[in-house]
Image (cartoon, rainbow, N blue to C red; front, side):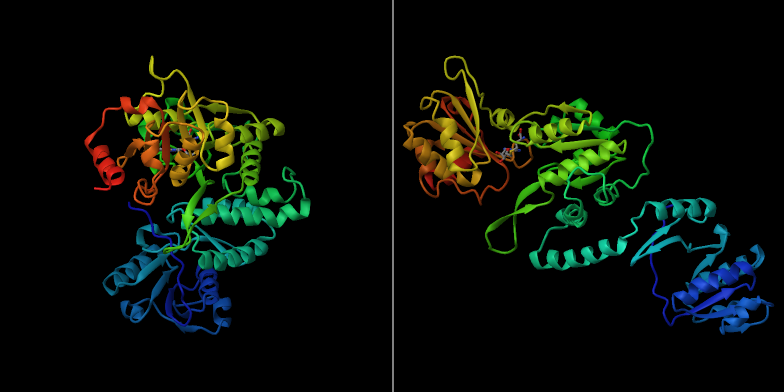
Length: 476
Ligand code: SAH
């Protein structure tokens, strides 16, 4: 049977027929009236409770025309009567909720947990009402007592998201962050086990697993292509209960984490819409990432912190490891294929080559000072230089290198979206790159790695890159 569609109905002022007048019908009547339905009860006899409700009562056996004009019928009678109700409802296209009688039902009332504006429906497709009740109790126990504060904060956040056009993927983690802050201020301690736990720990909805030791894996996901995940990374994802992943993580990788809850934890350059300037959208602060990992592990969960490339290459994996060490949470590191090496490799550029280059410097182009300080120790064109996070600043980076004495004819390449189906490569020299407009990051969007050094000239020039070369280098 296909999945049921969970649905919350507005019954206010709508006609609903309730067939049956016993104890079960009485309970259903209450729920229908609470939803504002205009209920007509059809039954030869009814309980005094039903009588006192002041609803219309038709004291006789059910006839099909009782359903005319109804939006919904609840059959709380004998199986034989329920069957008649179902048969009469079908041609009238009315949904039947047959209590405890799934064979005659097309709609199932769910178990309900309602608290402070939040409604949770629980369904076992009518097959295990007792289990529904147990799950309801479990959820009641799990929900925080102050859900109203969550609700108020969620409403407030929603207005902010709309105003700032926060993308869908960033909303849930942002809300989590905001909820954590509700408690953070109160405890002033980011690793406390105070009420902050109720926000962070409500993420994994599974109950605590006593005796199970939690664990965090800092996993490298490689440059993007899921085929470049390691086998160990896949195994960790399969075993995970909770995955916190960064920007640039492919959905196809997350599919390995079938039983896990997945949260976007990354930071990425976003746009606030239209032509406005790029803006960084922070999904979770680093501090929240630490506290969520630690709390989940302490509750016995298997956490995967999934990062692009290698977790320890410009990925803040080092900080996360130290937070885990400090908290005494068991962890391991699953290295990944770093784009520092893979991006050039996938463009046919060997970062070392006998007689051409025997050393590689991997650095960040994020800001000018960091770049300058990492370069001051190397001879101009003395090593292969790999610059990450420098795509939008490539022209300025080339200028800095020229200023530092790197020859203008030093070959340079920029690999964008390495390993993806739309991988693109710009090729030229430091001289051409420093010319304003020869490299246009907006024309080749995506993560970009810059490679500078004689090894770049060793790459076999493919047709597509030759084209880009023509377009951006010679301006043709
Ligand atoms: N830990 C990552 C690097 C994170 S910093 C790693 O080891 O690969 C992010 C930078 O990585 C980007 O700015 C870009 O320079 C580089 N990068 C990541 N994925 C890339 C890709 N598919 N193609 C080219 N460069 C990539």
